[in-house]
Length: 613
Ligand code: M6R
Image (tube, rainbow, N blue to C red; front, side, top):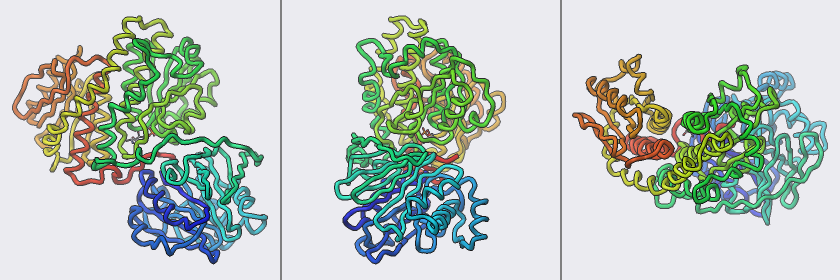
């Protein structure tokens, strides 16, 4: 949700800013811009609507020469995507600002600032930051003090980078509600929304904490906490490698990430299971004691992570026998839920920075101190990890495609492990049951590799989506959640309207949607609901739709005219089946999107990490 990069070093900063913006583009890509402090100490800005490449082709990086600069790639909130709304925003050639987040009181601030003759040139909320700091500079000693003074007037969420000819050797960086990281280099220091943007120049990072503000020069970094006290923050060494963020031989990040799933799952299981047991400590030192006391579970997440939580509800009730509720974070945070003592509050998130999920966690902690929190997250230094009592990190590696793939299946693995350990702590899982589940999990990388071999067949099926505008996904039990994830994938990258229904619900309304132009995709594992599902398929078939059925070889779905049956594997268990049946749905969406000619890795209107409401 907007990417920020900035730096101050001993050579021209522009090439680094442009390269960093490319790497941050997954966070937002509707416009981009940069401003540098040139050798004659003036702010020189270039902005373009559209993707970073538009900016790159309009900049002569060698001639836009400055050693201090900030840059931004935008996901629009206030003000449509356009050049005038692109960041950086500048006030009186004196303050340049990039911003990620939303200033909620911007209308009130704008009206105040207009009375003081500040002139607005954009429709954004960000411009009040530039004017606010400029105003504060009139009475403050330097840019740090002015920024400290101005941010006291902002309500909402922000991470910002600020430069000014008034203090040419400095960048001011502040974080409140949106992530910001300092890169500590040999020949300069930098700021970024995500480490991946700076891996060419450093692996040393400081993760700013909530309310921190930093004064950064080429050879010094001073950090002040929310009370204005100077603080030391640990410098951490990133384990990320540059190779991890390239597409390799794949056409898209999404395709690469789909094919990385066998490895991502082995990495997530590594050191979390022994020969036939799940290690409770994988969830934190206090996990055993907390899981023994748990009486209720509340899961909160958004999007794909929410779909993972839906699957987990089945597992947690079935295996651990704990009443489990799940809700999307954006709803949960704004209502008055009854929060019982001894509730385990689980957040699931790839980024760990999703604003709704984070705020839901914060609101729960305020309402009831007797809840425990656990986050299942793919980002080790994220806000959710910092603010949760227990953490389980999925080891999916960096996921750049906006559509989540490997992070979903690794979340499912984490939730399967969780169901077993809570079940053990509650004395609901026998050693034999645990062994069966662990054996199934160990088979996953091989089973996924086998499911991926169906890509050729799925490519052929994807062609049927060429002129289609609607699709229906069906599943029963936990497979309904997998159908929801399949529908979400198809919607977001191919722009085909897709709905998912529990197959038994069809006859209560949605069956009216079925016609020849609405392909129906069904998931048919060999389980206790298979016969019911087969009857539902008959109901669909008699309405003339084209059907695609992904089945377990043991399911033996009877072939019918207009029905493609693709066996995915055989004899899957209740834990492995949802994970394996996800794979053909990911491949189907990917190839349908290619047929539709959409931008697979950066679909319209979306951003990878949603750090605003
Ligand atoms: O980072 P999070 O997992 O918290 O993100 C939540 C959703 O925005 C995310 O899962 C989104 O739905 C997917 N990228 C869609 O593929």
